Structures are given as C-alpha cells and as structure tokens.
Image 1 (cartoon, helix red, strand yellow):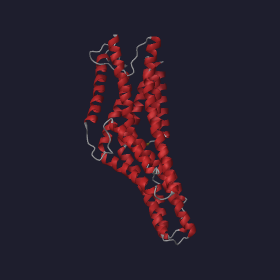
Image 2 (cartoon, rainbow, N blue to C red; image 1 turned 30 degrees about the vertical axis):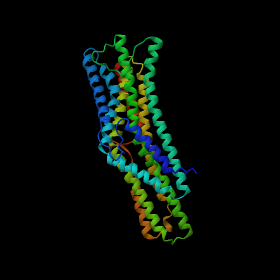
Image 3 (tube, rainbow, N blue to C red; image 1 turned 30 degrees about the horizontal axis):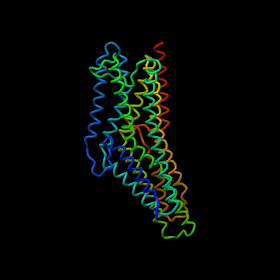
Image 4 (cartoon, rainbow, N blue to C red; image 1 turned 45 degrees about the vertical axis):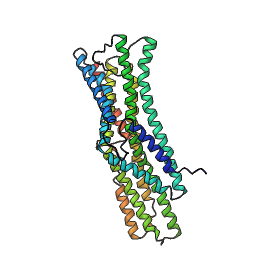
Length: 386
C-alpha cells in the first residue's frame, strides 16, 4: 500500500536539494557537523585568484587606458558579492540550521491539524518549488546571456571579445592560443559564479519566502478562533487559542529579525555590488565598445529586482498581519484576551521589514529609487561628455 505524501516530506525533499546544491560550494550549513572545509577553501582561493588577475590587468594597462578600471570593476563586482555571501553564511551556521529545523517542525506540526492546514502547506511546497526553479533559471539565463554575445560575434563576424575583461600573466590575447585559453577561463568563471551565487541565494529564497507564507497559518488560526466563538463565547479553549495566535505572530516577528541578522551582509553586498556593476557597465557603454555590456547590464537589473520583489512581499505580509489582527472579533473576547489582541496590534505597528544595510527597506520602491538615481547620473555623464 502506497504511503500518502505529506507536506513535510515534500519540504524535506526541497531541503535536500538546497543542501546538495550548497554543499557543492562547501556551504551546507544545515548539516549538524558543518565546519570550514576544503571545498569552501578552494572556492575562496579561486575568487582570490580572480582578484589577482584583475589587479594584474589594471597594473598592465592602466597607464595607457584608464578605462581598464571600468572593465575590471564591472565583472569583479560579482566575485565580491560571492565572497561576501559565503563569509556571511559561515558567520551564522547554527542560526541557519536552527531556522531550517524550525521550518521542518512547523510542517510536521501543522500538517497534523487537519485538511485545511495540510492543503495550505502543500501550496507552500509548490510555491517554494516554483521560486527555486525561477531563481535557478535567472542565474542560468544570466550565464548564457554573458556567453552568447562574444561567441556569436566571433563566429559570425570574426571579432574577438572577452566575457570577463581580465588577462592572465604569460597568456597573450593577440594569439589564437592565448585568446582561446582566456575565453575558456571566462566560460568556466561565468558558470562557476552563476552556480555559486545561486547556491548562496538558496538560503535567501528558503527563509524569506517562508516569512511570506506565515500569514496563511495565522489566518487559519484566526478562522478557527472565530468558529469556536460562534459556537460558544465561553469555551475554555478560547484563551489558549488567543495565546497561540499571539505566539505565532511573535514567532513571525522573531523570524524576520533573525533573517535580517543572517542576511545583513548578503543583501547589502548583493544590492551594492549590483549597483556598482550597473554603473560601471553604463560608463563602459558610453566610453568604449564592449558588446557584452548590454546583456550584462540587463542581468544586473534582473538581480536587483529579484531581491527587491522578495523584500516587497515581506512588506505586504506585514500589512496582512496587521489587517488580520484588526479582523479578530475582539469584542467577543474577555478583557484579558482583548489585552492580548491589543498587544499584537501594538507590535504590528512596528513591522519587521527586511533592510539593506539596516538603512533602506529591501523593496521594489527602493529599487526604483536606485534606478532613477542611476539614470540621473548617466544623463549627467552624457552631458559632461558633450
């Protein structure tokens, strides 16, 4: 007889995929025995090598062409983002593991409370799966776009362009041998960077999307409370149910606080490095010819708004919690329970938003402000050149 699949089983499968992907870059922090390992060391050494050849490229060409600084800073922003994300994850392995195990326990607890809870958890499973697929596609398409332009130009026009503007010592780009060695290294870097960034971002997708989902359970708890109130306002279960709702709301707030803690440098580096990539690529487009700049700047904007959309969804979830608390039939409760609802309302007036460097909220509105600022700066540079 086939055993019925439970939401917790599906979640554990998704968690295994996340752990497998992150373990390939050495950051499976959900493992109880996780510690700094040779895979992480190799990745950090590879990034250090990338920085080294970038410095070499600047040293070699900066005297004759200062725009080499832009050539290097544009792609190196990705490497910087990668190393900061890895180090950020290594700072809080216990907290990452604690949050992941909390989610497992939430699935196991609420799937046993009835069909409507189980149905909602299955929706979480599907939404989480879709988000992981979309995130993977974003990074895969980013890598492909970076590769397509120089390869296309070489095949059809015979033009030689690099994917990443860097040169290795003792490798002459003017020779066929040197060019193919460098372009091969570029291709390797692009795919490794895309997979590495995706592996680090899997934890962002995992925790921030579940932060968005928590309101669903809250709404079901409130619905259960209203059903009991409708049947009997003197039911002895009411106080426990109100306290449970308040506890769930407090857990949501604490969860967001922990996400802000563990993702402080991850989100900050992602946004700042993406902005740096956009700015330097824009200047390259204005000052010189680099066909790969156009797909790269498009990818940077996708990265910028990918995180911002997640932050906006958390903001919306905060508003949903606030509205949901207002919707509780507090007038049917006794005075002590009304005070509990009042306390929840006070807590909801100070929402736990996800922030960039603890200053600006991570949201589409912030991304639009950044986009407008970039546009204004670009127009200023154009006028200055004229």
